Length: 338
View (cartoon, rainbow, N blue to C red):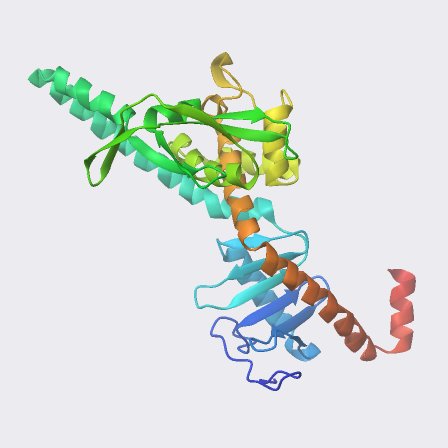
């Protein structure tokens, strides 16, 4: 088992995660073709590992990759980081249904439990206030909570747009004439007042902004957790992942939801289908998951592109190297029976 880069001769480092291959801080693997590389931290070149040392290590890498909750991927390359700091680069088709359900499922279920517990405590407080005859104070607190600023999004010019709790239910998906084909209509407040360091309230009715492109995706990532306060069940998460799969990409999901009647923008109780808060739970969850995936993909886009370029170069060399070890008659048999 080698420990130095074959290109720059620097030490490849060690990892404590992959028992069958404790070399390197970034491992790239292709389970379908049986390839395993160590990516040098110094020169970024891909070192192909010997055949006899690959198979158990590839199985380990695949297992750890599947178990990791935070992953990023393009059509050909996936990137995950283990808790110990080891990077895993997976070659092959992304596994969105599996990792999205794993990554978001527990989060949405936990969110639902927290919200239900909060609602129960509020209900108990309301009953106590009614018994004690302080309904006026309760009404004042309730009205104040509706005007409390719960999130701030950013306009394309970088201007902060404060959104109150009462505005969340008016956030809409709209069609636009932009290349994206969709936008996010966001009500915001033009005047706010600071009551306490940790409390900010709106003192005017405000205005509405339509955000498009990356700005809309970033805003959706902040707003949708406020819309989906009740989270979702395991079945709803599974259905939401199915909607993202059917759309093909997060951007296309938003475009279809805004433009194609009857696709996913179906409202409960015959409400306005453009209002995100009135859509079915699995639709809202799909939009939230898609917003986070798209924002993360954009943040890592350049690194993933560079990894894909490096992989294509390394794969050409690996294919030649592995073929040298296979007898000609075996190669001919494989070609005939493929």
